[in-house]
Structure formats: C-alpha cells, structure tokens
Amino acid sequence: MKYTLFSWNVNGVRAALKKGSLQDFLNLKSPDIFCLQETKAKKEQAEVDFPEYQEFWNSAKRPGYSGTAIFTKIKPLSYSAGFSDNINISKNWTDDIYGDPLSEGRVQTIELPEFYLVNVYTPNSKHDLSRLGLREKLWDPAFLAYLKDLEKVKPVVACGDFNAAHTAIDLARPKDNEENAGYTKEERQGITNLINAGLVDSFRALHPTDTSRYTWWTFRASARTRNIGWRIDYFFISKSLEKNLSSAEIHEKIMGSDHCPISITLEF
Image 1 (cartoon, rainbow, N blue to C red):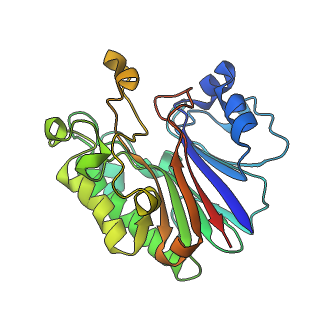
Image 2 (spheres, one colour):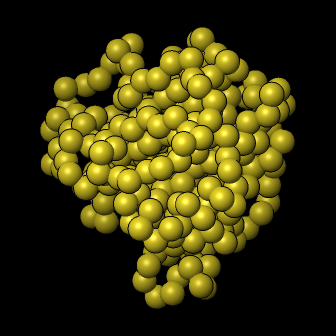
Image 3 (tube, rainbow, N blue to C red):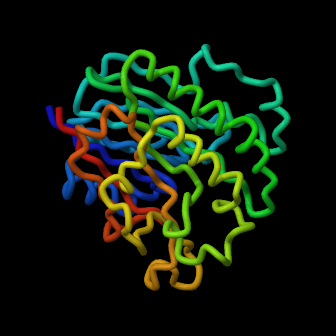
C-alpha cells in the first residue's frame, strides 16, 4: 500500500476555491489524502466539489477563523476532532485572552489501517508573544501527550502548520528573529520535545542539510519572490514509520496562499 499525503495552510478555503488554486493543486497532484489548515469556514460555507474525496471538517466556533479539514480517497476506520478524553486539559485554557483554543477547530484525526493521521493548526504566539505562554505551557505539551497516547495503539503521522521554525536552517534570517514569534526558544523547544519523544521530522530525515527550503513567506516586501521565508509546516512521523518513508517534499512553486503545500509518501 502506498499513501501520498499532502498538507497545506490555505489561508482561507473559500479564497483558494475562488482563485482556483485548490482545484489546480488537485488536478496537478491528486493526493490520496490532503489536510488543510486555516480553512476559515464551515463546511456549508465552502462550495467544495471533489467527488473522489470524503470530507471531514473541524471548524472554529468563531466565524471566518482558524479551522482544519481532511479530504481522503481512502475510507478511514475512524474520525475524531480535538484531543481525546485521555488528555488532561487544564482549566487555564479558557484564561487565554483570545478565547478557548479548543474551540478553534485546530486538531482532527483519522485512523487508517497502518497509522493515525493527525491534522493540526497550532496557535500562533502573536507578534507581541501574548499567546506564547499558551503554546509553551498548555498547547505543545497537550499535543505531544495526544500523539503519544495514539502511539499506544498504532504509529502516528502528524502534519500541519506548527507555527515555529525549528533550527537556524529553517528560516532565512534566524539572527534577526530570535525573539520573534515563530522562533523563540520556547517554540523551538516545543519542536525539540516532539523529536526527543521519538517523532521524526520527515523532511529533515531525507533532506538533513537542505537550506533555503521554506513553507511560508510574509506577504510584505516581496518576501516570496526573494525567498525570505520560514519552514513552519511539517510532517512528523513515528520512528517506526521511518522505514516506510520514501519521499518528503516542499512544493514551493504551488501558489494560492502565503504557505505552500508539503507532502510525504509512505509505502507499506
């Protein structure tokens, strides 16, 4: 069995559909499964017509904000949204000044015969770092605990926008951004914790020294044209799946969002 898996922060699925960028992507790549982040819509608000795919949506309660979706040609064994009941969720989640991140449609999971596939849109720490504490103390530990809980049953693949560059080769200007959202030591530690727990950064597993390979560029100052970007979108896989990983790619030439799609291929 071969799985081609894609992940893409589309920065608004309705905009992507209106521009035709999502349709062009599917015509070009036709993945077995693709995961979207920052959909900014409920299912009934998006005129999606992809008959080959079964759709799963986890939309934010707040209109036009956040949200995730999974489209799959392979019928999953199960589906869930959010974290499982096994994860100890602190009451402090609701203290966040932006609202409860658990109501923002940020996590969804499908179960396949060989692994769980988790789609995530990690909260941004904000320019003033006002959500960094949430990331460090609550979100990152809970997400890791969730993945490890799933791993008790079968391996996991976790993909999406993690809103953090891990190392200096994962962004164009690391020295200029050491105190900025997306590259603080706390956010980088969150990625390190995933790796220390046995999860593999699939792109780095196959491209350990590649530089100037990014997945997000600000809309300002022609950053994408100049390739002043960040690698903040990932596929993390259980260590036991590394032997099944045959490709891990970044698709910088696919336009339609401030992010580009990423993909992996797993062969069993």
